[in-house]
Image (cartoon, rainbow, N blue to C red; front, side, top):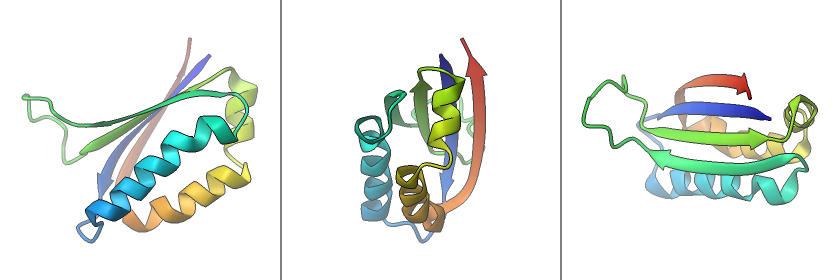
Length: 98
């Protein structure tokens, strides 16, 4: 099992509707790409104020490394990237295996 974490900072031009479209695109990925077991979407609500401007998080769970390798070039991932990239200011990607 592989966890794929995205910490997201949206750009100032990203509207609430555009961010919601990105959210919905992420949440539909498990039904479109075999091996993506789950996707969680969250907005920072930590009282510690240590998020360095990153406001949103995506946590994806892949069945295994082969599933992650399948996801990255998959056409559905490319479609998601096409709506995500214009809204993005910065991102941290962090993966780990269980």
